[in-house]
Figure 1 (spheres, rainbow, N blue to C red):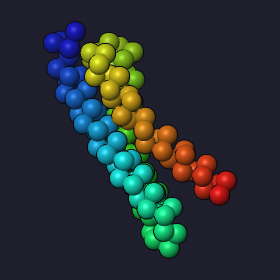
Figure 2: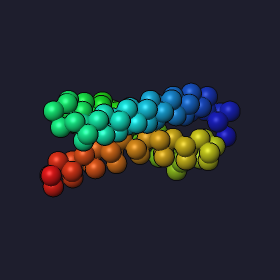
Figure 3: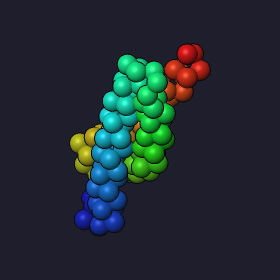
Figure 4: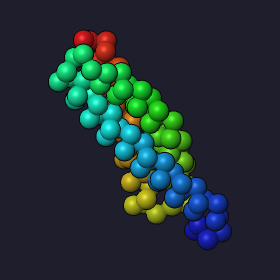
Length: 104
């Protein structure tokens, strides 16, 4: 189906790369948050919050592309699912940090 829409193929791979970048940002943020929990005087919590916010930008873009491609069938299912899973990590991490900040 994407042979007729080459831009959809490029957009799908770009979204997957952006989702991967966002997932790496979330992993580094989790490491910083763990460091912040171990040493309360470190900048770990602040670094984690900043990294998650920066990871949200490519993540939201990748989520939009993945949802549109899934609904229209422009990409293989494996790529769409992988993009969705990787891109969903940053919003979930942001929600966890927000709830943790409100409760603690």
